[in-house]
Length: 87
Ligand SMILES: [Zn+2]
Image: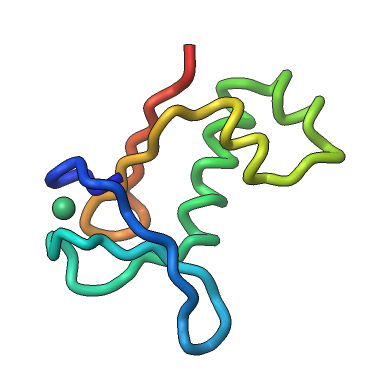
């Protein structure tokens, strides 16, 4: 989600084969790197929900994130993430 306006970011593939998220709203000029965001979210999950992180070993990171996190707001660059946790 875009931290500035709350619209959903769109996933896309970059020219070099990486994944990124792009805002359709124009709040940011460049796509943000998907792996970077997911790594930050993964670290937060490990701190907050170690039960999920441990139990999730055979599952994908995306599934773990889906279980723990409702929405992720991304700020002006990928280092600014605000996590809305599932309760
Ligand atoms: Zn926006």
